[in-house]
Image (tube, rainbow, N blue to C red; front, top):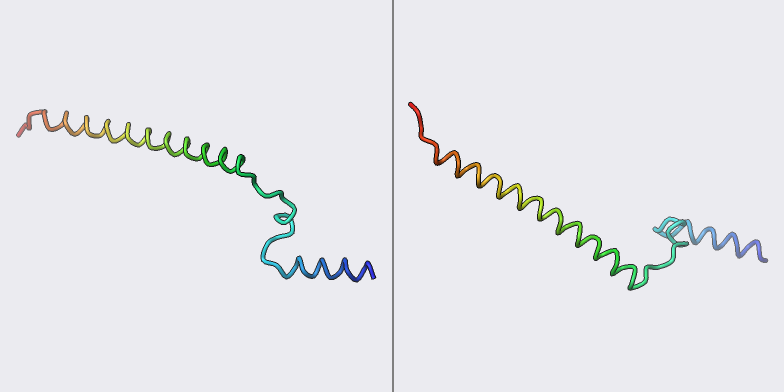
Length: 72
């Protein structure tokens, strides 16, 4: 009887869309979700700062090239 139930459990796991290893993970707590999200936000803010720096550098280059006299 017990073996039949174990076989049924294995069949049920195979029928689900989620892989077996994901079913064994503990669900994220609110605290771990918040910590993960805060880390992602910090990464995004850092990326934005880098891109803004590149934009500022490009603006400076454009301004400098506009100021140079055109030689014919």
